[in-house]
Image (cartoon, rainbow, N blue to C red):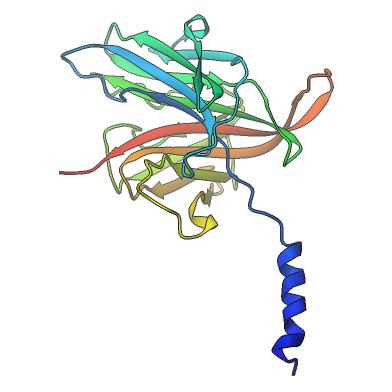
Amino acid sequence: MFALSRLAPLILVVALAAPGIVQAHFQQLLPTTDIVPEQGGRTVRLTATFTHPMEGGPVMDMGQPVQFGVLVDGEKIDLSPSLAPVEIDGKKAFEAAYLIKKPGDYVFYLEPAPYWESAEKLFLVHYTKVVVDFGTGAGWDHLVGLPIEIEPLTRPYGLWTGSIFRGLACKDGQPLPFARVEIEWINDGSVQAPADPFITQEVKTDANGVFAYAMPKAGWWGFNVLVDGQIKGPDGQPADAELGGTLWVKTVDMK
């Protein structure tokens, strides 16, 4: 048998050869509320940030988004002119405000500018959505028509902590079977992950493109279904890209 002293160099070689943990990127699109009250102000403010939610950062610079809008009553409204650049942790992000004028479910969506991830040597494009309700409870499952998109099978607001969220991953409007879905909670600083695998939860869609996850803590949760793809690079040539379809939902403690 090998002595421990002879095993140690082998262990060291394995450790040095192991690949580093790649941090999960999430495009955040967060409203000031996901349920607009009947009484009071009806202006929803949204903040778009590209970051690592569970780790509390770092924030990455965003380029000018390709598109930003809202889907309500089957109509897509371009809100790009309302986007204003802001600085968060010294990096470029965006904010916008939208006045809710009538009852409905408002599906806000964002297509960010491609982000070059040097560590992975590819572009990241995460098409992102969040749903805001005002008084109807209808329309939350409507698809925007993004290349990669999550159709919620669970109503994505009014959720208690511990609720199971179910979604249908779609690519070009068709179910996406056996796709990887990354999940992160926006850490408020109260939780420290005991090991790297706790930072980003991961599930796969089933043969029908459906996934499910029970959210164990109150706050905002991001679900991001990922596929490999290509986009047109800055030089006009095809470039490798990670395409993501992201949906944000909020849970609240039952008291």
